[in-house]
Image: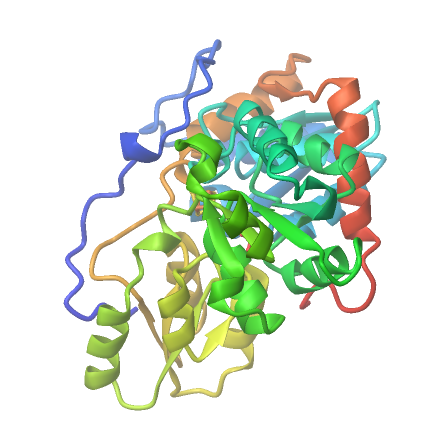
Length: 391
Ligand code: 13P
Ligand code: SF4
């Protein structure tokens, strides 16, 4: 992997991105230095057989992804979980909101396990249900709520997906945001507005670059300001109300680094995730979900050069898998998603061995009412017309 002036920092679990859920690992977590961890994981998987189905998000560490039955982006994993009704246990190597979605989409006889409860998502945590309900009331007070369709990115709590379900909205992922937003804009006639939660960048990039809205059509709702910091006139004029949330990993990529790399690497292709800032996406050559990023690199000719703006575990894996291509990270610093990295081999082994012993640890269970309402919004996503996934 080429690292242009990239100092390698130690792999971090930055407290800034940790989303502690107040759940300690109750059992004896194996030591990270145990030389038998791989053999223990293999043995547990073998013993559990078809009872267990292991899902691995593309941002997971290599040490964990090697045990995944399927890998994918959040959309693909949601579909894969739903398509495995026979597996008693779904071990989700990803983050909390993904495991919640898997629980919602799987049957009541199936149990979803997140090996470390601290594997949250700082972006998802930027929209709390109480804040969203308050914003919804404020939209009513401003006289615009009847025109608003809520759309939430998969990276949100089950409670927010349920909010979208009961208010005529939909869930989307980075694979299908364009189709989902298009659907949403058709729900309330020509004056429809969309409230996009919680990632302002995915919302803005999709509305402006895919659906042709202008930046002036977009306003940002700041949950920490009264009435979102917006006047009734601004809300009346807006077509897209973007929640003030962002990804602390993808938000780091800058145009400055793109320019720097383009000056150093001839014929460089810049490939980024749509959670990046608008200016970064504008200056990139290709933009798409993690699944799209993988497919693009696989289809790229040998010898081509790529700077990739997404999570570092994935970029490193792509660089290792494609030594014939010049693949580099689009940041001067190492930046893993620290919460994705919470799922390490000791936690995986602990969760799997507990299952072998008949003990389900770290079960993710969404309450029935939230589940029913969230399922409405998730099902609307899965039913979206046309091409909803680039695989
Ligand atoms: P994908 O929808 O591409 O899997 O992205 C999930 C995510 O957390 C990106 O930061
Ligand atoms: Fe959340 Fe960003 Fe990590 Fe994805 S990369 S899980 S959006 S913090």
